[in-house]
Length: 476
Image 1 (cartoon, rainbow, N blue to C red):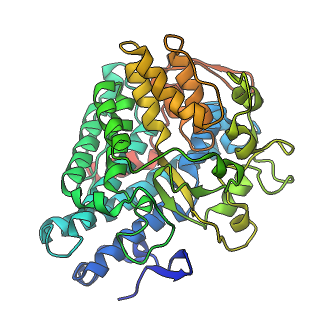
Image 2: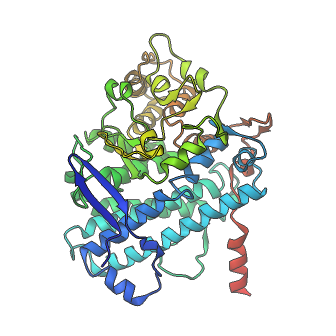
Image 3: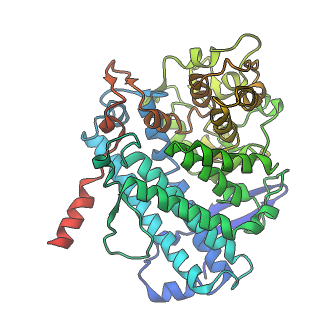
């Protein structure tokens, strides 16, 4: 069998590369099914292929799932006639946005169907056939939940919308099939996401021993470099995010505390800001992220990072004042490390060595951050805001002090402070728009238009027409 995800160690650095596409093989083939899942290597090849598909192209986590919300939130701006500029205006029907919406939708469900193939075989084989069968099964379940969750955050209506708008959200596909999957309501989708994540958590207990508190970037087996996998702590962190997105702070706090109290993740030291490496997974903070080099050049172009001649995106006009807010002494390490102030560009999300054609040889892992530990502190801060202001300030200050800022006094912290800090912390990571949607915030676009946060349609991407056309053809 051909390996589809090669691992080779050179000194302390491990290089990953997709050698052939699991998803490019016809998934209908019975011989393919039988061959792929007859060995542990086959399962690992299949799972590595999924990670590669999710991160190496520009239609999912290697691009659109991060670029679209950054443009729509106003963190970056695009020229008004450009496809991202139209998205930022909630103009969903212009040619560019229609194409982007279709790419995200179709690629996501393609990956989900292949995940369902893995899950089907894992369930048939049982969780003890191979040494790491539980991890194969759990990771596939967790990835299925992650993709559905991000789909419903884009294409589903907000939780605060009327019941009639939430009745039909997205299909939650649980079977490996080429049949049409019925739509689920918003509540049903979230219930299924939670069910998959809790199922993954229940079978991945052994993963706790594979995620050390002190990590390196080397990997020689499936159980190494676990922050590049949907590990058990990533499952719990995602549960915290899902519950927070639903407004269920009680359960969000339970899972956020689990991740923090594990002791496996810490806030990055000052030295990693001084010698900052863009476009990498932080070995202290990252709970989960995709290993990826192939998207780095595209990111550099899209964010106008490595070439002043590229102008697809530019930073929001208020980015400097955002980071200067609350800065009484010293400076915000994020501002000085994550931005090139002289060029007015963001360098946080792109490894310029890779973007310029070089080989990364640093101490971290090149990739795309999906879950980082500061988010868990912010959730616990928000949870305690009304009932225990001192503890809320303690969680909040733990992050902000590590970023070079003074602490905020107990009783003075507000929800707006937490929102502002989350925006600073996750700038460039596709987070802010989803929080704006959750809270129903009004947004003023770069074009000067005010989009009302009370209108669900301003925060809900329409499902591609092709989805309904396919259903009508089947019914017809």
